[in-house]
Length: 127
Image (cartoon, rainbow, N blue to C red; front, side, top):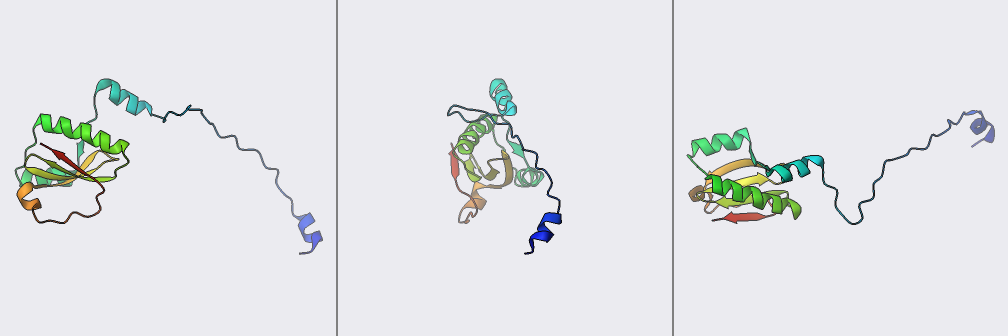
């Protein structure tokens, strides 16, 4: 390319971009929300409208003890990097989005027999 053409094009002065960095000394970063939930002991599993509808249609009930156990196990699954998990609890089979801590769909255990569950990378069994 002709040098005369290059020299006539003004080159804007670049301002250095300073990105905020933090040193963690081998620790993982934890958000304020995570600290707050840990301190208050609140990590509720959300239930999508679809799952709520399925739970009602199929007359599936889950005890508070089972919900508490499921919340704990979903947190463990989250730490292990799971994305979608099949949760077998009581008389229900649930698909849970682990990062969103949300029940996506639900069916009773009898319905789940013989089914092939795809796009899950973990299973949680709660008795």
